[in-house]
Amino acid sequence: MPLILTPPEIEALLLSLKVSGVAVAAALPFALAAAFALANRDFPGKILVDGILHLPLVLPPVAMGYLLLVLFGTRAPLGAFLLDHFGIRFVFSWTGAALAAAVLTFPFQMRAIRLSLESVDPGLADAARTLGARPLDRFFSITLPLALPGIVAGSITAFAASLGEFGAIITFVSNIPGETRTLPLAIYTALQAPGGDVVAARLAALSIGLALVFMTLAEFAGRRARWGTR
Amino acid sequence: MSIAVSLRHQAGAFTLDAAFHMPPTGVTALFGPSGAGKTTIVQAIAGLIQPQSGRIAIGERILLDTGAGLAVPAHDRRIGYVFQDARLFPHLTVERNLLFGWRRARPRADGDEIARVIALLGLAPLLARKPRGLSGGEKSRVALGRALLSRPALLLLDEPLSALDAARKAEILPYLERLRDSAGLPMLYVSHAAEEVLRLADHVVLLAGGRVTGEGSVFDFAAGDLDGAMVRATGAVFETRVAAQREDGLTVLSFDGGELLVSRLARAVGTALRVRIRAEDILLARLRPDSISANNILETRITAIRPSGSEADIHLRCGGTPLTARITQSSLARLSLREGERVFAIVKSVTVDARMKD
Image (cartoon, rainbow over all chains, first blue to last red; front, side, top):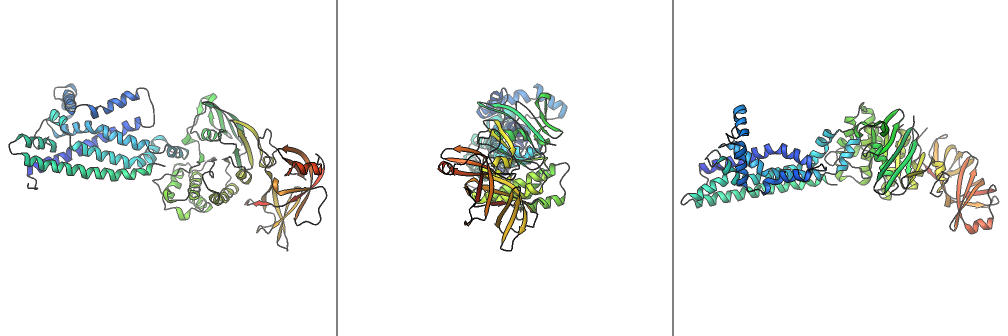
């Protein structure tokens, strides 16, 4: 089995990295805001909000892809609005793949951030209050830096998970070489062609290797999270 | 300008209903057993909890007045808080911890004051280190310095020594004494250790079951003379002044009522020193003993006799200074002591606390 990747395979690898990177970066501010709203405080309807935010974790990805199509298709109201006013088109585009990956891995990121925010001793924020720090100041000078290792670990895990996203991407943005054909879609395509199992095996091995590398990185980042605890 | 605190707060089965005044300078001790509500009071003063009703004012400046719907947020109160567990920021160096409050204070302390605080607390060798590697005593000192540099109008110390072992306590106490004697900053010192209160406080507020049971000077506290006090006398605490250095190696301390001889103290004549005499360290005699090794024999008058179990606390007055002796009930019967009678107090040992004032 030749280990050298062919140009279309390299293309799929680079596209996967780009889609996942953009997905994680785009979801981060939302995950941070949601985690901050849910951590250490109670409000009416919290359980419902929490449940809705976790939906992508349990819904079938294909159903998620269909939902995205309904919302962001060029004839759907939201999709048409974005296209007419901002020239943003998600369907059949790599940005759509990134959107699908972002929505699906959002709960991973939010959970990790929430856990690390909650592990920061609230007594430290109290100490900062008596030293004159206002709420936003406390968040950026105490809570966020102490939670940072957990946030980094959560983002790396979300990145690794989004590399494997298949169902939502193929449903929402189809399987276009060089545009939306990420690694899992390339494996699927290879298996459809006669004699493609060598290519599929090579790409599967590559996926496993990538997953291992990123999970190890996440573990290293997470170890530093002990900072935040007393 | 005094500091007035009055609070009502109910949490579960516990009701806090306390009001007291603090003098504008010196150390006020909030003394009471655990569960008395001490921490609730300091948290309310700092603004970390909102009491159901109450009023807190430092002189003219009102921090809380629930009647008028006024509550200054914690970050605008300028109240320094030294927590029991130090609460240093683990991701910042000691230096950046120290400057955290300084940066946010208006007006800021100048460079001289920063240097003075660092010297006062011996922090120079720690500046580049992270809190993680510091000993308990070092952490307490950094927490103290961090609070001081935020330029507080009032400093709250919530049992800052309770997490430390005896050796570390002995290491920190002199720093606290130096702070008391050099900073013109009112301090509220929360403690359940009478020894710390006797050594540091000027004014004492007694707290039990969420209520103030007594309030007064540390001298009255030591003598067990506070109204409603539920604590027994622990001995006597009073102010003395170095009167002379004798050629035989002893130092003469004068006080309102006489003189005490102690082992040589390297202090200038006129220096004010706080002295403690434990109730167990005073023997009583009807007649002045003439062949005895003790250096200090004081002529006193009995002001009160308070029996307690198999013992009795004999409250004495030597000139204007109250003293307390603890003797057994059988000694009391043998000497047949009565209030108003003259008696000689033989002082076995005197503890002199450092005072840096004048």
